[in-house]
Length: 214
Image 1: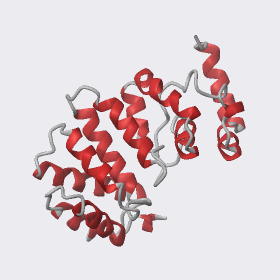
Image 2 (image 1 turned 90 degrees about the vertical axis):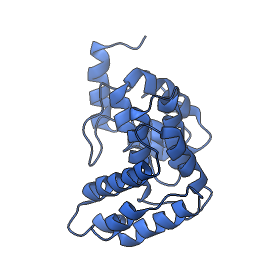
Image 3 (image 1 turned 180 degrees about the horizontal axis):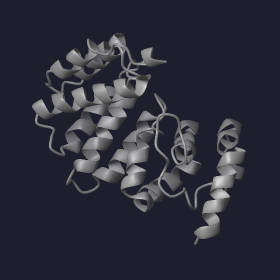
């Protein structure tokens, strides 16, 4: 499992980012690629994300220059090779920048960017920090995804707001107004099955007893 983010994946990320014309030297990413041994998947994610942030800082993208980083990531999406588990540290990086940004709309745009990334690799991990930072603000956008034409984005709405996920802390509060009311018209059987498990229903019911849906 840890090898889902290995040296080859980081080298591939460097190639894709370099092709975006960002003009950045990815020296910290190169160092990260050579120092993954002994790290868990979660630790590799954080290690690569820190390296990516350091390289962006060297290019003037910090503190809080989310728009520059987001533009680079969106250009990278033109490459079909920009996919797989290496996108976990990428998504964590853009969330870090969005939360630090003073730019109006960075928070909302980051949610949109996660929706753009999620067909390549689910954004359900990185989205948790946005939920923790401002639950109501995030859910205002996440709710709109339940009717999205792309089932990966619909899945991000359901899985990203679940109370518990592997490698992650509990989601803040609960996804009020989202699930299960929308389950009946979510087209994907897999999404309905994933979000309607007994444990999720129990947690959701308990939460709603203390905070009814408006």
